[in-house]
Image 1 (spheres, rainbow, N blue to C red):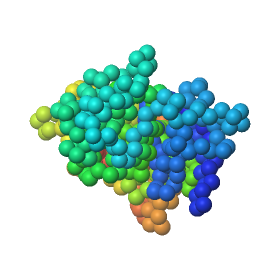
Image 2 (image 1 turned 135 degrees about the vertical axis):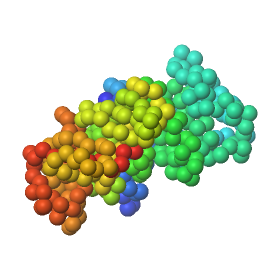
Image 3 (image 1 turned 180 degrees about the vertical axis):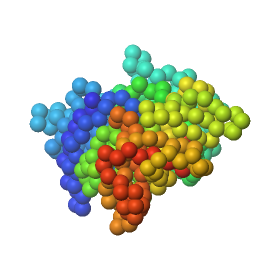
Length: 357
């Protein structure tokens, strides 16, 4: 685990965050602008020193102010990717990478140059300088450079924030691939729910300098008391496996613990792991299985809870398998007409399923 607590006071802001996150996979610090995400990340890195602070990374203490322990930034085995790439403009891509690689003692190198270049697709860019790179290309180089430091922890501060939609689309597949390939933990700051849905395994929800909630992404996305479940684009996030392709109708079938979902045909092989996202507003409920409907995705489940979303709408949390729930947003009138209540068996009709990773 990565465990810590920080208290830091500024003129118009106070950070009081206590947390625990897995020392594997991607943990997203998610919340609105100004909530304290970057400040918390800088405390993790050691750029900001909390006078009342503690940080342990996989059992190694990097900060314990009660015992006067503080490992400075340059001695922490971490990589840091900023919003702007911060490449050396006088060096080509190859030499930017070599700079990080040479600074890492040979005995501690866990990532070699060829690996980093291949993972981020940098081979065609090696002889270019910063001014010859697009925004997305610069960030790919910055990520590769951070990896060549062979960090035990990789910190990423909104690496896509300064990019336009096209550049984000270019770099996202590389981030998803790294998610699957890296064994080191990643802490990823974002205020984009789409990015978080695609990349994160675990979430720390940050609000007004504190950790409002934390837990696995799929749990927090649909938990009744989670702030995520009350966003306009609240959604269920599901990890599934490609089961088969229907070439006749250009569809792909994916299986998860709660059943099977059908989505538009993709090129992934059978057996490939995928992540899908179902917006709460794209889910409707029925008391019996419809046979005269155009909706292909119909799951059966049990209502766990109903909670208010707005004066006119409710959120319904439906368990479709142990530990797996679907979030639906329906009108209060619909809930009244169907006499919906906790413990009731219903059919979950999903209008749209989006493949996100």
